[in-house]
Length: 349
Image (cartoon, rainbow, N blue to C red; front, top):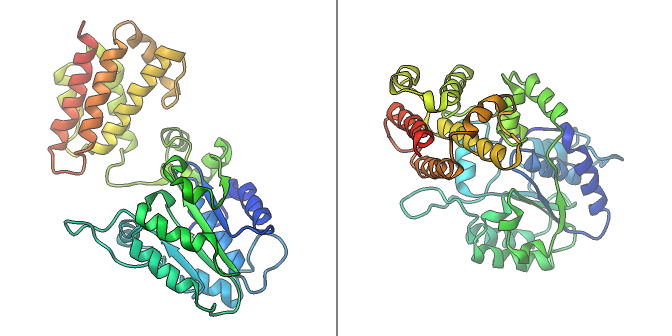
């Protein structure tokens, strides 16, 4: 599992965790938006807890046997519990250094997207053993909302009265989807979105082009903004598609066919079109623009012609298409169809 250390915007949250663990707290649930480094924060905390020199302050020494074992993803007193699908996906992209447990599949042979009850039962058996290095034991579980009801019930038994010296660090990207019985047994700590300035600087240090715009489109989450997948839009293609969207009712089929390349990724294109539609509705209803702050003039031009109900209908079609984004559709035809239906929805009376 790839790990990012010392993300600058998470220092206040790290200090809060240290304060919580100074009390008689054995389970902390970190929650907040996806893509802000909560899992990395949990792993940093686990390393600090397992550091055998435990220096004053909030950082592990990085040199003792405990720190070396954590860095090598082989510490016997650390368990990382995640859905098999997440672990396999990261292993395929190859810096997997995690220690996810088990290998489960759903019907149809796909890796499970849930934390399985077998994983939690293995954890319950492991947790009663004496620690290998005579210190604390740490369990990092992510995402907490991926536990189904049987897994959750099994976890509650060890969460309520764990052996002394056991610390749970749970991570949730959707706290409202985490079962109340789990939340009630943890100290909750909200990890906020980072300020824009350090997040943009972090992205620029990693060579991310158009860092400010990428951060806006990722909802303020730097790790999501830094991702470049097979469905990502290149700056050149993004510019082309935005140029077509600006034309609105004047957009012609000939322009669409000429400007949309054969390799246009469906998922990335749909995401761009959805953000455009959401911004238009926000501009109409509240005069605000979130994802495309430089396109206010375009939304002003659309305001007199594109009815909100038609925009909502187009967005519904986009949502349906996104469900098929990973299927072998003709990408060029799919993207062209979305743009043509966009122009049609503006021209309809």
